[in-house]
Image: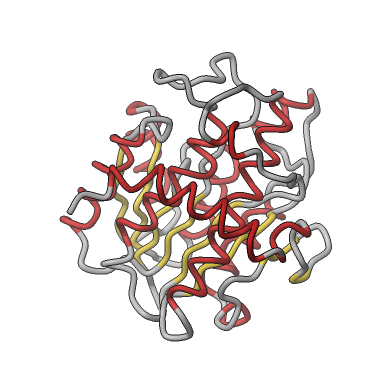
Length: 269
């Protein structure tokens, strides 16, 4: 059955491949990106592949005020979004700090998906899916770095931001309970053929379809209907425990509270 599906970071890499593969199912695709020209060019491509409808949304996810506007715009236009795939992410970049001095990895990889998810919960149905891009790279979260008080090396910041989002997804599942939308974290596969891997590691990477296929399964398949709060490791091809810190209730609570405090000013009344 065709669904309404939002994909962030859909003009390149894994998000783009996922959007292309979803088009064959005749879905209504809501495509997010930063570049207006890329978004415009993508519309015809996805329609030619079978997408029933394609809408584009432009926002810089390193700016939480833009994330908030994106969420508000989506809620104003759609009474129902069946699946949200929080795909957009940052690893190495020439500009590692946002305009207000925050580490862009924590903002784009953790805070933006948490904020967007919070804003869209009003239109994601009980049987909906929220898929967060995690990673095999996970590391204990430094709250001071999350708060922007000091800088980390790219891999440190990336791994910490992914564990933080995985923890937040886990906590959201507990909050929503069994009757809420399914929220889960997915490592789509290590070193896939994306721009992030080429720039970060100087290598071509593995078949990107590996990652696109698991994101589509996570968003649509009955196999994931009872998986809320879990972490799927596509390198292993199974659900698995994330980093050990995600099993420590006190640690998770500290990280989740820090994330919620950072996004709260952008949630409105």
